[in-house]
Length: 449
Image (cartoon, rainbow, N blue to C red; front, side, top):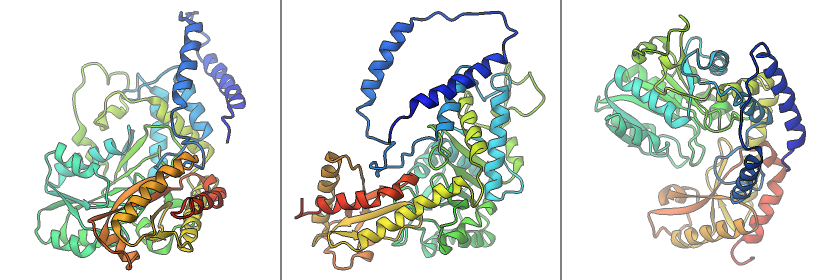
């Protein structure tokens, strides 16, 4: 893979001329800066950036890092010549309208008939807003799976809401029996259902959680920051599909366009099924909301200044790649799903590695074969380091030993956790590199390197 900057910069130059033409009636005003100095600093920055891992390349198969689509990259850069602020309409008149279109399209992807929502800095901020609203409308304990993102426990503390973690099944999803036990205490205000855990890619049993809501009356918040876009993928298995098809019934939803939505950081989105929750955001501002009687995005968000560039980039991406089943965008998601399954099958046929839970999405978790948990953890860290030396970049995850042993009953458990290897195969190109990645891992297996 190469940085095809020549053709992209030509497109950006054309777009900048078009943007400039829209302000041609203004008198000329020149900016003064040290162009030579800018060039020198840019070169220094480029050299510093070489210290990064190759996030853009398929041989980066570690954490949840996916390069933005070229149209997002270019649209983001284009907007920076104006640098709009999507807090109030006078700061981001065009980009605010584009944000509203984007959010409406995301809600439509989930099948929400009505909603209120906006973009924000990422999943953490989006979850903060969802839990803040939940705590005001349904005071009570927040509960989420122990495999849910740690942000829910931390944000509950910030909001001074009680939090409890629900045990997970061996597959990584929320244990319904354990949830029922918590619900019997009658102090749960909100249940967080994770649709695509960031650790193992598990899908919580949302359909059953919604049935329990009918009985116990709690709110349901869906954290689909990682896995939400798979709603339109054709390759999602039947078990997970049941839960995806229920997402629109949740009280609130979070999704991160800067993960599978092909966007630069930071771009998250929060949606509420009841538009009336906008009243909770009501506040006074002495100078920002007077240019229009229309709704300002700052009136329905906790954040104030926000980059309009994020909305412009997302709008451009959704315009080029509509979020529809059977389309090009969905096809890219399906390639990631297929890459994960093929990689898991490769590992399942190996004597050197232990394939753990079969992937529901595009995250694969696997252990290094050994007699006991301590040795398996040490060998996983060794493979991780030696793979990086060969420019194959993986990730590590510590899992409860009982969870690992469910898939590996021969393992001698002599520690509470087992360090395993983890690969997020987020890039559609990963499908073409499974042989290369699997072959490199085979060569690195203990006793063969």
